[in-house]
Every structure is written in C-alpha cells, then in structure tokens.
Image (cartoon, rainbow, N blue to C red; front, side, top):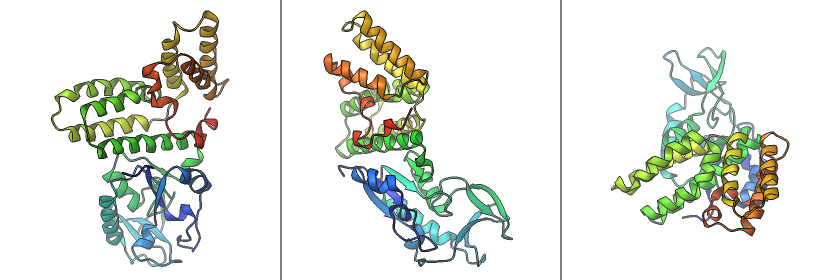
Length: 319
C-alpha cells in the first residue's frame, strides 16, 4: 500500500499540454502544494484513446432517444462514445487503489457536472451533462472523493476534498493491512468528532451500525458498507454550527481541570467562532493548548484535530 494517497488527476491540470488546442490548465494548488503530500496518477482519456494533440473539439450530444453521445463538433457524425466508454470501464476497473480524483471542469470527457449538451442539429442545450470518463468513475466508485479544478478554488470545498482523500487513504490502508474488528472499531473511534463536525444526523446513524459489527461474519462486507456511510457523511462540508457542537463536546473533557475563568474564556472563543467573529483556528488552538496541558487518551486519538497534513494550511482559508 502506498504511504501517500494516490490521486487521479486530469493530465491538463498538471501542466501537460494535452488539451484539444495544444494547451493545458495547470493548477497551482495541485502542483505546488498537494503534490508534496500525495502521489498523482495523471490521465488524459482523450489522448489515452489515441486522439492527437491538437485535435478537433469534442462535445456531448443528446440524441433523439435521450442517449448521451460523444462526437466531434466539426464532424457530428464521427461518434467515439463506445471507444471512450470502453476505455473508461477498463481504467476504473484497474484503479481501485485511488483515494481521490481531480477532474477538468466543463470537459465532455472529464467534467463532473454542468457540462454543456448539444442536440443533433448542433444547437446548444442545457449545462446538465457529466463527462463520459468521470461519469464512469462516479458510477463505479460512488464513495470516491471527486472534485473539479474550478470548485477547488472554494476554500471550504478544497478543505473538504483533501480531508476526504486522507480519510479514504487511511481506511484503504487499514483494509490492505488485514481487517480485524479491533482495527475497524479503533478507526471509527478516531473519526467520531470529525463525523460530528460534518453531519450530526449521520454521526448518530452510523454509531449503531458500527455497534452491530459483532454480528457481521464477513468483515469485508462490513467494510464496504461502512466505507460508503463514512464517505457520505464526510462529503457534507463541516459547518460553523457543527464545528461548534464538536468543540463544545471537547470542552467538556476539561471541565475538571480548568478554573471558572478558563472555562468562560474557552466557551467565549468557541461562541465567537460560531458567530463569525473569529476563525476556526482560534478555538482549535486553545483546545490543543489545553490538550497538551491536560492530556486525555480519547482526545489524543481524534483525527478531528489534524485531518490532513498541517503543511497544507487549509484551515487558514476557512472561516
């Protein structure tokens, strides 16, 4: 198992000149920050099926029967739908080790959402398509963190994506090392506060499911079901309200160690974060300080405090 998460990425986002016009869409965050903590696996599906660079532009066409086809814009009868579908099916079946994927927005091949559709007469339609390659990826691996380059400029979505890829990587590593009930329970225990910060209802729902682990004879079947539930919860961006709830929960662990002034100060900092006056680093830093002063075995295991490499400094950009 790789030490670093393996992330698929549209080749043009790495700076490779593989776009239809011979250009690229190099993304600084991908190549200058994320590349230091993950292992990238670049792919340009269009080049992979043998198309040249440069090449005529492709588009998604909604046929009269409602089927989505991939065709060249300058030659609408040249259809490469099956060729791309066959490649995508083969690719996704060989790459189940991935912990995430970054795709190029608006691409008829790689777009994750809002890809322009055309009718058979060449008229522009709604932006409601999904690229053929990315569609196959999402269908095969619904739990996989997948994001578009454009959406990753949003600091909340960027942090959420990175958080998910490291969670999935740790979960995949656990499976690769051999599943055991103890390892699964320990993993879930480490993620409790993180799940609480993302979605309180999901946190409450997954608890009884994990508690039923002793009833499962096939641990791999449990793993598959747990993975889907876990990643669905983490996909919901953590809100101020839920972060506040998680930090108030953490505060309770220090009630016997802190004096009245310290308890009041900590509560005030958390509530000022909730109200948008302070960034999340303010209460988190204070909580980490008290955890260093008054170590707690449970809190020290919690992934919530460091869900990804601190080097990325993603919480600096999140309110």
